[in-house]
Amino acid sequence: MNIFDKIFPPKKYVLKDDTIVYEKRSKALVIVPILLVLIYLSIKATKFDLLVLVDNFKQFSFILSQIFSPNFNYLPRVIDPLLETIKMSLLGSFLGGIISLPFAYLAASNMMQNNFVNWIVRLVFSIMRTIPTIVNALIATFIFGIGALAGTVAIFLYSFSYVGKLTYEQIENVNLGAFEALMSMGYTRPIAFIKSVLPQVLPTFISTLLYNFEGNVRYAAILGYVGAGGIGILIKHNIGLRQYDNLGAVLLCILITIIIIENVSIYFRNKLN
Image (cartoon, rainbow, N blue to C red; front, side):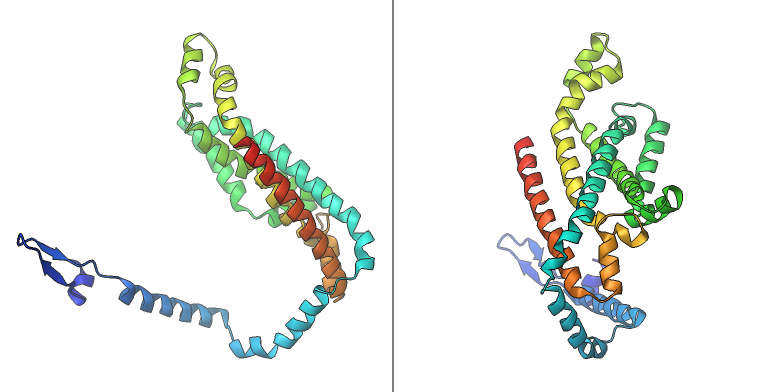
């Protein structure tokens, strides 16, 4: 019997055959107070003040009313930055995903039977995936200068690590029957991988690429805050000038674009599955 059961003894039932059964007690009596204490500490640490939130709600409502009343005359200025954002996301996503494939091969323990190589490649994936895309974009602007190239590089780095991790995990779970048969026929491991394992993981790999591209369009929309090009520059500009009706037009275009890309991506992913 653990400490919890000693404090809150469970009910005991005796069955007809004299078997003793204890009712499983809910741990809510311990979990809820701990959760409340943690919430209280979080409120103190963040200096959250409900009164301030209520007092400033009118200003928040004004901003929302402006955003939901978009200036449609501003739409022509949104088209070019929006297309730039889509191009950044498309190139960075698919280039990063494709280049990650050979590294996923090196990370998969059933393909590259070298623990040190597996560990190094997986470590690279983990480190690159941990760094936020906007931080990568900020670093890239110092190296490549302000513009879409920096944003493309940032998206490429995230896509490389994200798709690579999912792909090597998929490779480790494939059926190796055909791979082993080709190896016994004298094929090298890379050729046997291309002929037997790659066709098995290809549908999932393409599906992951599409899902990654879909998410990167959203991420790319804010990269302009650090000078990485795209529609984020307009978002930063209009927030700075408090032109929330223009911001509403920008957000409307982003919303429509993401909905279209999501539906196209879902359609092709369903076809692949």
